[in-house]
Length: 102
Image (cartoon, rainbow, N blue to C red; front, side):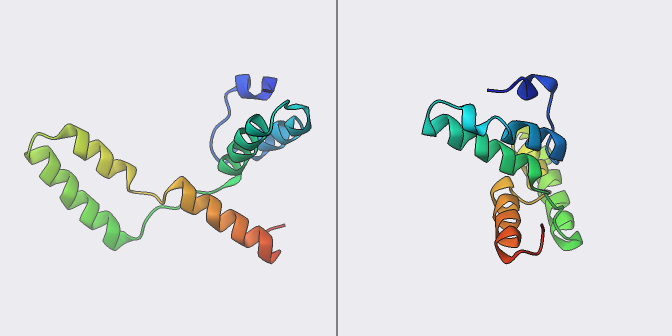
């Protein structure tokens, strides 16, 4: 792919997403183009934290997991503190389709 991937991109990195987008036309296969475009969407999307009520439930679930000596579940609960990347991308694409984000 691009040298941009080697520069250490992070989520919400618009400049990195734009650098990657400039390389889309140079990818040889549709599969590689799809992966690159999906990566760009992930970089442009904004993952939002869940509401306070959800955070309190997650705190309880994490405490229960730690009490049961299930560190794997405690880590999984931490991953639930923000919306999924799929939901974030869906919101981004929906907003763009409505013309409200451009």
